Amino acid sequence: MRQAARVNAARYAREHLMSWPGLTSGPASCCSEYCLRTGAVELVHFHEEQEADVYLTRWMIAKLQPALSHSTALRLRDSSGWVTVRLDVGSDIDLLVTLVSAALQAVTFAAEYSLPASDSDRCSRHRLPAP
Image 1: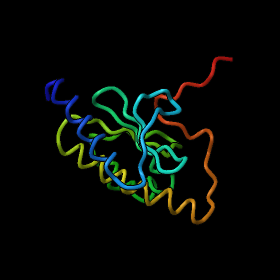
Image 2: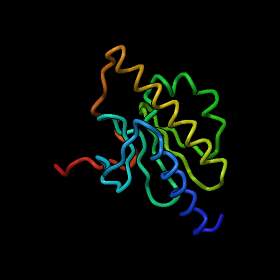
Image 3: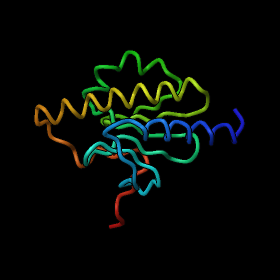
Image 4: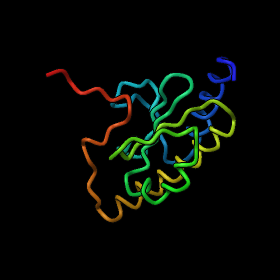
């Protein structure tokens, strides 16, 4: 896919998701310019034109592991609740939207059952402060 189309795909995905009730936008803790959150929970960080991180939570990733492991558009990191989605083709946007829906379910479940959030569970672009 050409670079201009990638930019349009990421912009389209971001604009589509911003129309969902309960999602607000703003800067991310990793300094990404575009973040979508529900309440205080950051759900999606848009990085560059062709990449987004989605906070699925660790338990949702474990639940969806068989399906997630077959996608070439996803990058999973060990011991993280974040999944990186490459936005190279139109079906990647559909995948991102599906994952955001799952993320909303996961954070609602976590809040309902008072599951602890891990401060060390940060998106792929988070930089720790210099010592």
